[in-house]
Image (cartoon, rainbow, N blue to C red):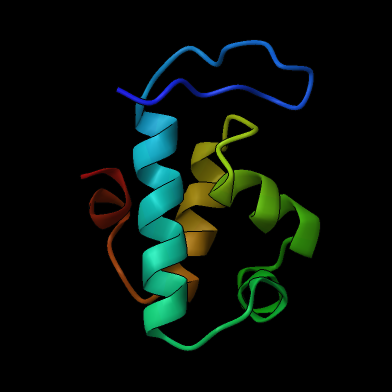
Length: 80
């Protein structure tokens, strides 16, 4: 299992962050979107999307929903 750290190198609490990050990146690339384009569609900042994709932060359920909607998938698709 991959260790996940935030920007201050503290280990984050759950491997689901890495799974979610990989799924968001994979789906974004499948749609041919840049991080900036995904952020614009989802209504968040480009750097936030980057931090989520690197599993550097805990994503809120609200932002997870926004990103799932922007990627045209159900939230569950980001968590498996």
